[in-house]
Every structure is written in structure tokens, then in C-alpha cells.
Amino acid sequence: MLDTSLPTPPRSPASLLLSQRLLFRLIPAVTACLLAIGCASPPPTRVPGGSVPSSNIPPLTSEQSNSITIHALGLVGTPYRYGGKSPEGGFDCSGLIGYVYRQSVGQVPPRTVSRMAGFGRPVPMSELRSGDLVLFGSASPTHAGIYVGDGRFVHAPSTGGEVRLDRLDGVYWSRQATQARRPG
Image 1 (cartoon, rainbow, N blue to C red):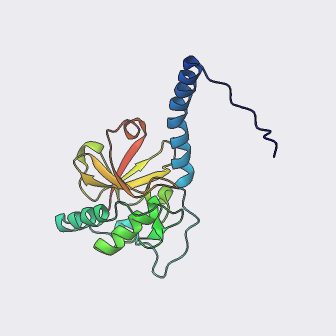
Image 2: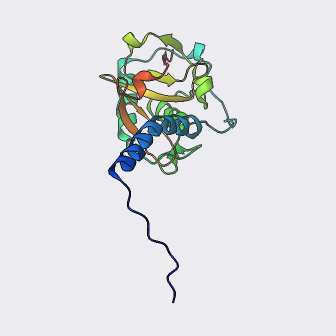
Image 3: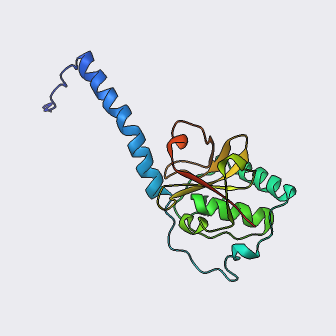
């Protein structure tokens, strides 16, 4: 057999460094794109009973907030799946929130992140409590998670990822437009 492959010419340290720099500059942009498309939920399906209007939802008790936090933390490591809304099938960000709220306190928040922006009432970021929703995106939110205290939130970030715990003051999240909502 005749080997028709050509050897790869050696690369200089300068060209390798340039390639690394380019790669590191692309990572934030690629991450932002994956989050934007990875967490976009499919069109909502009608569930018997549907979502409860947020004006009819009583404020969360401390016990309910703790239940939401414990439940959300227990799902860390569950695979991400676009449109997913169960531990067995995986979660997208809004599916995770809906599942945790249903299982913990019996509330059914809206299925899409954009609709979650009208769920409950706005809360200043300085007044966050466990169980509050944190939404990311400037004009219209494109990603959401559940605040669990100590500057941390649980979310389902993107395709190929899994439910994880992140810090709001982390390098990526601190640069995102953020709002908070509190049911009730």
C-alpha cells in the first residue's frame, strides 16, 4: 500500500501561542451562543390546569424555600436535554425550574424563560432569598436558574452539559444582565 498522507509541518511556538490566544478569545462567545440556543425551550404544551397565575400564588414560606433549595441541589449532575423536564429524561433550564417547583411546593411556573420574566414579583439582586428565580438576558431573558443562597444558583446550562451549581459573581455570570423574581 502506498502512504499518500503528507507529514504535518512542525509549528513554531509563536504560531501555537497565537492559536491558543484565539481559542481563549472564542470561548466566551461560543459559551454565550450555546446558552442562548441551548436553553431556548420548545413551544409550551398545555397541561391540564396549566400554570397558576402568579397573582394567585402565596409567598413562599421559609420551609418551602428550603425545600426548593434542597431539591434543586439534589439534581446537580443530571444531564441537560433540550425540552427536558424530568430527572430521567434530563432538563433544560425552564424544565428544571418547573420540576423543582412542582415537586417541592406544588406550584407550576411558566414553561418558558421569557414567560418566567412575568412570574411572581421582581426582587432586587441584593435581596435574593433561597428559592428565588434568577433570569439572564438583556432585552428578554434567555436563561434561568434557582437561587440557593450564598451567591449561588442551580441551573441547566446547555447541550452537552449537566445541571450544576454556579456563582452569580463568577467570571461569566457577573457580566450578564440579571434579574430576580420571587413567586407570590
